[in-house]
Length: 132
Image 1 (tube, rainbow, N blue to C red):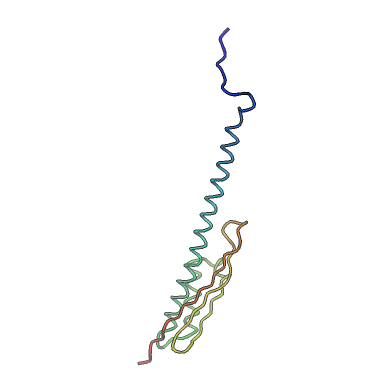
Image 2: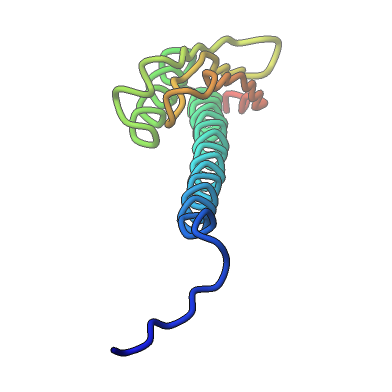
């Protein structure tokens, strides 16, 4: 009869590698999901800032105004974030002294469900061009 190969360790240690691998993969997955959510947060905040800058620049032109600022800013938000996400961010413009001020604020649901909402608050002011 052939001899059975020797098994290292006791019988109680045979499934330990599978448990360690599973726990390691779960921690790695959680870390990757956290990093993806962080990237999403940064993208949303950058998109809101870009939309506010575009709106303020458009509204600061000599023959335009608050309405043009809001139209351009809302369109830029929708282009960068999509309709569903951009609806949760409010956008408003105002003429203050000799500047056009655009503000984007609100909160967006995170990309990963169990994370907290992403708060967005950005304000951009552009000096208006004088009428020639």
